[in-house]
Length: 96
Ligand code: H2B
Image 1 (tube, protein in one colour):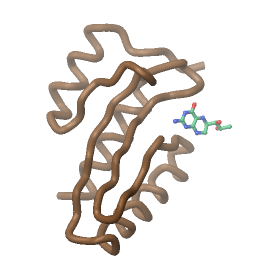
Image 2 (cartoon, rainbow, N blue to C red; image 1 turned 180 degrees about the horizontal axis):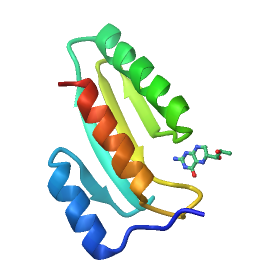
Image 3 (cartoon, rainbow, N blue to C red; image 1 turned 90 degrees about the vertical axis):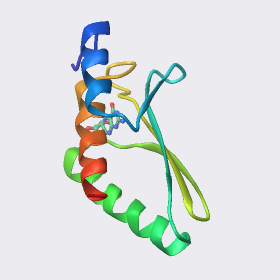
Image 4 (cartoon, protein in one colour; image 1 turned 120 degrees about the vertical axis):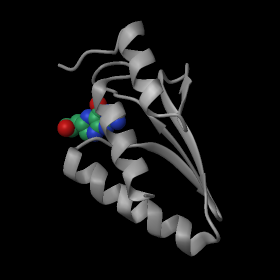
């Protein structure tokens, strides 16, 4: 069982993830990514998919052409957990 983050842990996580915003439904972290075209967006999604499989932690996401919208939430916790923070950091690191 994995715990939902408390308020202090959420504040700390967000300080570290300036591009991500907290969302309520589902309780999680959200970020929009915009790329040059579909090829770049889908390439990014492929890299995220590999990360997600390795971590056994999967995003809720959608793609429209060059845009990818990601929400990270932990179904096993019923909300935001450290797993989402870790995946958000790993996703950000793909773009460095
Ligand atoms: N992804 C997310 N986002 N939340 C989970 O609770 C989760 C997951 N659980 N991926 C994993 C898979 C679980 O269902 C498997 C059985 O480990």
